[in-house]
Amino acid sequence: MLQSLHIENVAVIEKTDISFGRGLTVLTGETGAGKSIVIDAINALLGERITRDVVRSGADRAYIAGVFDELPQEVLAFLQEQELSPEEDGTLLIQRSLTADGKGSCRVGGRPTTVSVLRQLGRMLVNIHGQHENQALLQAERHVEYLDRLGELEGVKAEYVAAYREYCRIRRAIKAATMDEQEKEFRTAQLTQWITALEQANVKVGEEQELLSRRELARHGEKLAGYLRLVSAAMEDDESGGESGVLTRLTESVAALQAAGRVSDGLAELATRLQSALYDVQAIAEEAADFEDRLCFDENELNALEDRLALIGRLMKQHNVTDEQALLDTLAEMQTELASIQSSDAYLADLERQSDVAKEATIAASRRLTAARKQAAVRFEQDVQAQLSFMDMPHVHLAVSIEPTALTAIGGDVVEFLIASNPGEPPKSIAKTASGGELSRIMLALKSVLAQVDDIDTLVFDEVDSGISGRAAAKVGTLMRRIAAKRQVLCVTHLAQIAACGHTHLLVSKSVSAGRTYTAVDTLTEDARLQELARIMGGTVTDAALSAARELRLRAEEE
Image (cartoon, rainbow, N blue to C red):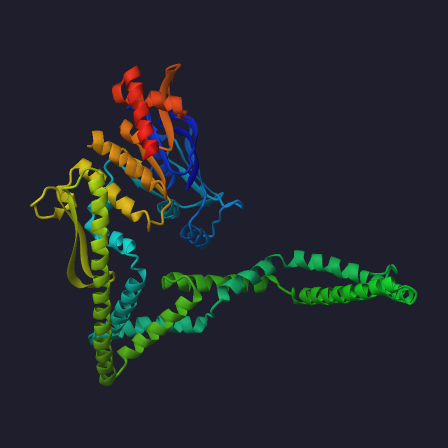
């Protein structure tokens, strides 16, 4: 969830700090005040494209920082994979800057990173829908993702993917075994070279992490040895100076307490406890000495560790894997493929039999996935239809088309959402049929249904109220408020009916001072909200407009 946003020298915004909370936050303001600049700043913070034109005139650089909390598990896993981490309190600070000459930098958790990594992270944190950005809804190839997420089909889909990959593996082996002699000779040489390199490398599972640990010891070996010598010096007697070490003093103290214990039971108990502590200290001294004996790294061994890590890194990069087990699996696959190239006709016949079995298993898994998608489609249509009816679109019907196709990595189906805008009309592609206002409401209906399975906590809607007004706008506002019951929702709007539904209302205002334009973002009190709602409705704040604004707020709170 986006907790706060700091913007400096972005377009007309000189400096502003915005705090966000749970629920629905609405942003309003006059045209040109800078509402969409706030959304653009969030976009930039999440790794999307930014140009030097955004740097405020006369400033050296633009700077944006955002703090996120309640990070989902997917984000935490991604951060760990990229060797990044949140703060101790669980929050994540993201920073991005761009200089006037076009040089930029990105930081996540205080550490520099690339725009590519930032973009991947950003798309896990925030989902932004702009006035002209309903691409995911317009792109039919994305519709199957919506359906699978809503139907929670991860299990049945994983079964299909496993079967499909096995079938593809066998078909690749068959292709390798049946290629012409020139291809066979080239592929044999290539596989032999790769296999030889991997076999000579003899990589072990967990080796990279062990090497990294040993490298750290090697890098700091001298310092560690110094610490351990201090420990040893404190423990043992000083032969030159005659001073007693910790062990001798503890031994003498134990003997003294044991002697005293013959007189006092309490002191006898202390003697026993001190004797036990002495054993622990002796063990620690021995282990520290043993550790010091093993700290025999030299420059050559450190170089050898670096070379070994570099070799493992090159092999992983060459074969596009991220761990030793995947590298070993790749080696096994290449050995199998090489064996298949060099195999006899009997081996090829066996592969064909395996292929037939794998194909049947893949087809069966595909049919199960298709059946599950059709069941999910029925529920999806019903749920979306209910939301469309709520938003005064009872005659708009959404249908999920599921047509068979050749088996692919995602199944044997082509999924597309179709709509019929009027009764009696056949459903057609959303991209070809829906108007701007319909797209906005259809997208909100989808988001409302998907909110229960969507793993992105923050949704941003930038003027998605385009093309709607009146009662429909009020329904859209109510629906967005409902979505905000499970997600953080930020919405830029020009409609009072939607603005009235916000749990928090931010006003974006513009002023001119000394010939320069300045934009401010303020959180409105309830009285100030009524003034702003009245302005949105009528341009001029009158008693009638204020009364209408109170009515809108009352309805929103009741809803």
